Length: 151
Ligand SMILES: [Zn+2]
Ligand SMILES: [Zn+2]
Image (tube, rainbow, N blue to C red; front, top):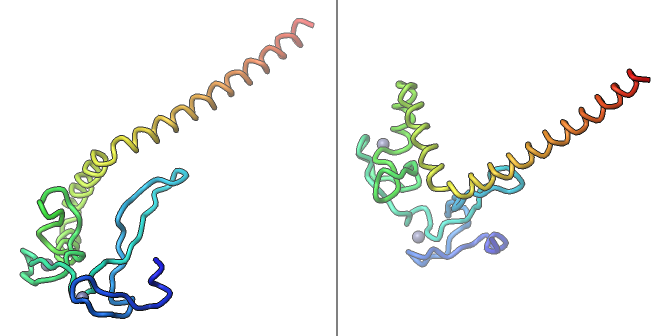
């Protein structure tokens, strides 16, 4: 993000130069790096005023798309209720939140299936090698014991 140096950024929609703080930082992609989940962050091209908006079907307020959770259930990729309405709802209905989390994990898994499987294979191979080493070590130790006994 080279534009951070100047602290000024041009909005791609209203074409006004604004302070960098007027542009939201959001994560565009998730990836694994050395076994941990990392996020790739970027600053949005539109200032906060120009962000795409959507009307929450619960509180009926028109707010930024970023204030809606991501989902695979709707065409625009966002939930029908805003984050605040969803958070409030799940606070009152914790069982529902569990169900929603499960759905989200399923969605994440199908989207990142190949990557997750590759990581799992790597992990399994490592575990297998460790197990083999341990078995060999044990076998060596036992052999020594056997020799000691017979002598
Ligand atoms: Zn703007
Ligand atoms: Zn709402």
